[in-house]
Length: 126
Image 1: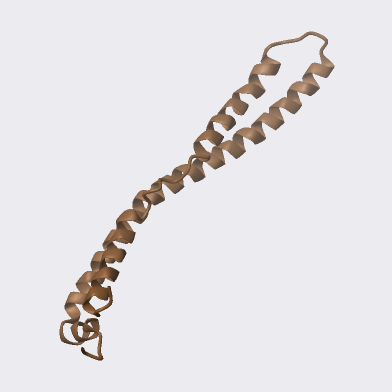
Image 2: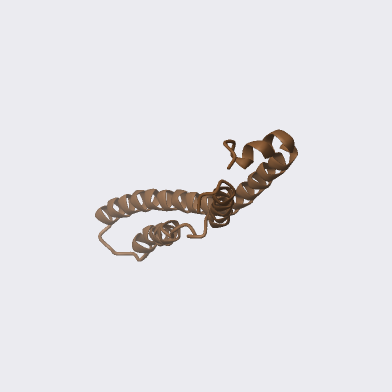
C-alpha cells in the first residue's frame, strides 16, 4: 500500500486532468447557479412588488378615509382604488413565498459524492 494517496500522483504526473475536472465542476456550478439565480431574481422582484403594493394600499386607504370623512356620500371608488394595490400585494406575496426548488445544486452534490466515493475507493477505504 502506498503512503501517498493516488490523487497526489495524478496531480504530479497529469495536472491537466485535474484542471479539466475542476473546470467541469466550475461549469456545472455556474449552470446550476444560473437556474437557481433566475428563481431568486423572480422572488426578489415579487417581494419588491409586494412592498410597493402594500405601500400604495396604505397611501390610497388613507386618502380614501380622509375623502370619506369630508364627504357624506359613499362612492365605490373609495374602496376599489385601495383594493387594487392590496390585491397586487397579496398576489406578489403568494409568489414570493414559494420555496426554491429542492433540486438546487443536486447534480453538483451528486457529482461531488461520486468523486469522493471514487477517491475513497482508490485510497483503499470503502
